[in-house]
Amino acid sequence: MHLPSLRALSVLEAVVRTGNVVAAADDLRVTPGAVSKQLVQLQHEIEAPLFESGHRLKPTPLATELAQAVGTALRHIEEAWMSATRVSDTRVITIAANATLSMHWILPRLVDAEAKMGGRPVRVSQMHTTDEWRRLPFDIAIVRQADDTGGLERRPIGIERLTVLATPERAERLRQEGVAAIAQETFLVARTRAGELEDWLAVAGIDAPVATRSTPHFYIAVEAAVADQGCVIGPPGVLADLIRQKRLELPFPHLKSDGSLLTAVFDPQVCRRKTADRLLTFLFADFG
Image 1 (cartoon, rainbow, N blue to C red):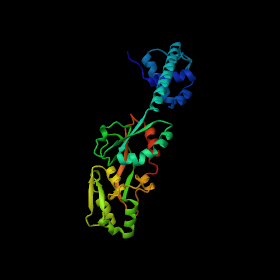
Image 2: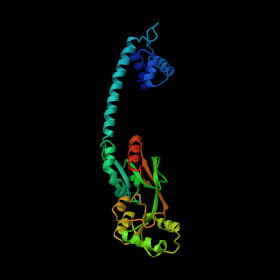
Image 3: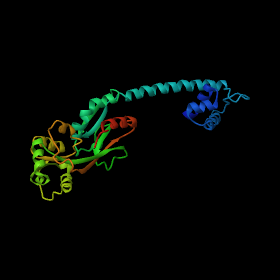
């Protein structure tokens, strides 16, 4: 059995309910011409008159019965949709982000973020740069250097601006001795952030090799720097909580190099655009 389009049935319901083509068009947010065209097509498909002869907008009993049935069905659809969206609006939002960004940027803002989302729970799933993020469960993923996102929607967050961070005592000594003293320092370098130390040294005008200690992940390098095992090159914005707590300082805040571009990616069929945009706008309003 062939059924006409829901659009055509909705047009009939609106015309019968309002008794007016123009009013029905306004209700459906289409043109009166589109309404008339749908009615003609529907009458052709049903092979029976929908309006009384001589009374252009007086519906036949058949049309009235059909319009009432369509109206009931549309109300059921609307109620089901409202119920479904209410469920969607209370589902946990999972954000996948690298460990450093999760610990030092997202988690300190999480309570306020949930309040901003009307109490909807937000969960943070920490990942490593070496993880295949596409295989992780997430609603929104924050990735670095997102070259291939497999058709997911993107929202740029910003470029990490990098500089030297060290314990207050070490940072004060560097300030007193000047930038040249950097050449005598030990730097904690994450293997997942290759090239960042070299880029910053170039900005600082340091061409001599410096001593380095390698770590598998950046958050380990940061914790080692907090433990005064050396300096680290990192984004002071992301690590602002450690700076506020006086655990790390910036000896040369004017010397900064560009790091990675952070990008938020999501599937709009899983996480609605307005939900993603609202949450990301709040979380990263002051990023940079």
